[in-house]
Image 1 (tube, rainbow, N blue to C red):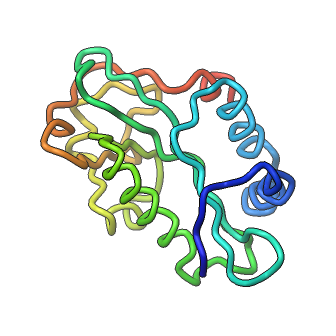
Image 2: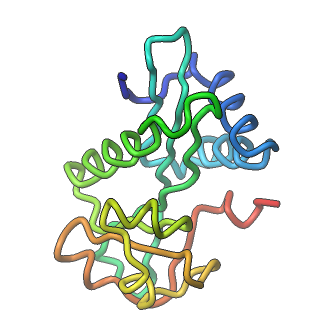
Length: 166
């Protein structure tokens, strides 16, 4: 499997991945709006040797209002073509994305998702409880990629596209 930065030529296939994985276009539209609004931090596509991508992940900006020195990101969305799920593609995308963000100096990543899946990467609701997000609850988790990430607290602002999500 090969993971690389998303390219413009990937977009039609990426849209199809999200629509197939979620059974709707809302997540694909979210990705498109994050791109359009300039809130994208990192966008990766996974290839398994087939003609197009089989998985995709997006990280967008996260503003920590009470901790402006902390550089944050939101992991969302993540999708894998249904026929390729349960083969480690999603996990590989998450691991690669987190490593790239860490190398780029990101301090904290927040995700809304299955604790059993994201917990494998070190995400935990414990640190997330110090934050106030639009999605507070047991599925909001965070991961400090640096010591500064542990200082995160208070209200956060997601990319504008999340507020428009239906």
